Length: 267
Image (tube, rainbow, N blue to C red; front, side, top):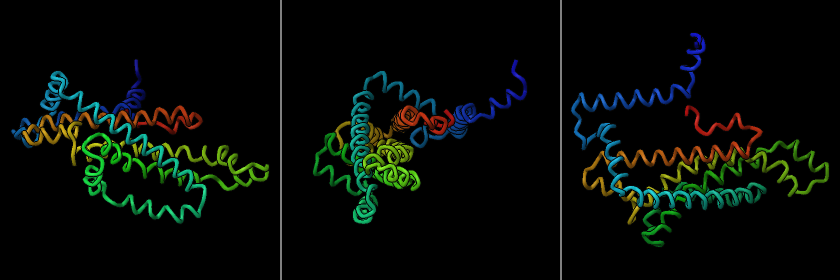
């Protein structure tokens, strides 16, 4: 039998409280919609959202659009992460390159992706290519900037010691700079993975023939708010899954710091 102290410890744990908070919020949402008689076109109840999602799954309308959006997210995230980390390694190795090129990369990042998305759709068409490029441009900068910061975070004492042992620049990079940068790189990948969902939906809003963003627009036109909220729920789940996947890989790679690499505190 659990002691009062043990029960207090369990219920004060964030992992135990997080789902409780979610259930309370959903119950309050459901109760408020029913008590105030809020029209479904304004704010559907959680039960209506779940019902709409179940109907979409049963009818088969969700899966083709789901797969298209997942392909755009994963491809865009992969390309953006690879290019961002690659350029980050090159720029992070040299103060000269950082001072020359990094300001332009920052300037390019400040341009709203919503503004350039129509241009990319015109250039690349309404297919997957334009959505993947838009997603990659959003995922690119977090991977780039965190890689540069991580490479520059290597303690000078470590590099001086390796140079004293006649280590080459490549050996210093492999033995000190890159391992030191890995936590920063994974932090950037975590942000890039979540932002990739936004990138794919932005591209589909601008112009698409399929995808969850396209499905949201169609449901908006028909005033199916429960359906819109159900798609938003699916997008949230995709983002959480990507977040957990990055955290899982981080735990495997950064095994020496596994206690600091919880992919999603509270779950």
